[in-house]
Length: 250
Image (cartoon, rainbow, N blue to C red):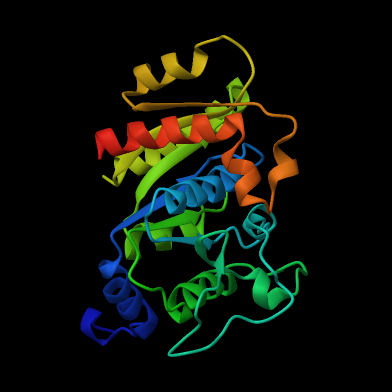
């Protein structure tokens, strides 16, 4: 079959065209799960919205969606449909997730099924004119990372904690991003508890911008679903510092 005769999924064409209208697309990614990527994604979206930006949050962590808990979204009803699906506004953020349709049950798919699910969410969501779209990516390197990289070309913020094990996994993601020539804003060190500078030194060795750190806050879950409570917490100061440095470098 000639290249020109190969089947082209019309959804990919639509997504490439539609998402060009969004101001900035930023993907929070990690080579490892459990590093607080979803929390940083959701808190960043709330922070930007509080700063007066029009912000969307797309949860593409299809196996373990959790942004709805952090924002306090009501997943008991389907979003409105009008020329596609209208993402509901939650805690000041336009939000879309597979959890609205999965009834919070496990999504057990593989291969093409996973690609189709992510592509369908990106296709059907009718975002308003956004200043920022924050994407909570699934951990690791896989199909969704490849699709998002190709279709949306976001700027990546990579998340790790301070452990060597986490950083070892993150190095592989950083290698992929740099090898593909994808935009990389830098790395955030999350849940920081010690005074050590291991992650900073690793960033310097890898020639990766160290955006900053977010401390470990044992009571952080108390403010899930409570935007006003979050804005008063010390973690908000950390998030604000991260975004100051992102704005300075982008």
